[in-house]
Length: 337
Ligand SMILES: *[C@@H]1O[C@H](CO)[C@@H](O)[C@H](O)[C@H]1NC(C)=O
Image (cartoon, rainbow, N blue to C red):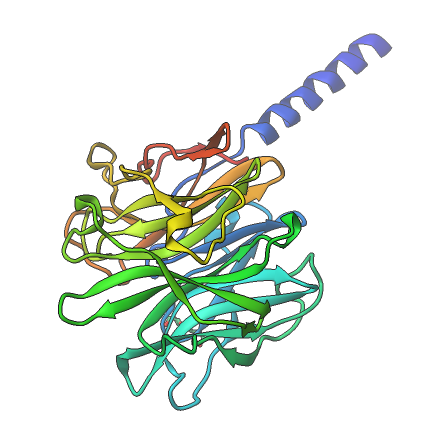
């Protein structure tokens, strides 16, 4: 009797475990306005931001699938200040030196040409990026580059004795719209301490669909090797893709000569799976599993607008190199990590 009772409990337990480990999610995580995602896993919850234009909003859930139902989005920040009230783009949240910060681009006067980068500060609880209201701190406009700039992110080399750097995409010329990758040193999470240097520009055919663009730079350091994975080509095209720069170990990240560009894209459209223009990603970890959030479109020719939706997939590391999978079809069950 006792034995068969235990056996039944074991079977029930095994079923519960099997069900739990088989939890799945499907992409996309939203039906519209999912561009330029920033996603992290912090203390048992996923947090997601994406470009909303009118404000900066964050969603949170214990599971990836749960982000879809987290419709009570928290509006983290908006601003009516002249010059900083139009088209809030690509917010990224970072915990640096004991506090949460959000880096974002915003314009004014309903004029896209005035996009510049700025930083907000939030709370001090490392386990919760929503523990306090975000307030405006500073613009991050390099002394030598008061020009169109978007997609600010952080290259943090402080743990290996290097510095803290701001990386972003800047427009070099209007003659033929061209965006290159820039870097500037930071003296703190809210202040630049030197001019920006241009470290890479679009030169290869896959970086120049519609017009030459490098944007959405995101740094990753694995096994002591630092890379910047960036988005290449114009966001309006189906050929938006991810490319990769590698920093020569020990070299000065402020010098273009310290960075080597991979000859081929590392993540591209997948017409067989119905994924067009995938890119503007953000890399994060759930425990030891690397994941990347990115936006994609589900039909050709959908441009840069609200039809870009957020998707997330695991990726692997080979040696020190991130290896991205083929872009997954939407509405297909993927395993929750
Ligand atoms: C934030 O912006 C989005 C998209 O424009 C809008 O749908 C949402 O209502 C805004 N949230 C708040 C609290 O204003």
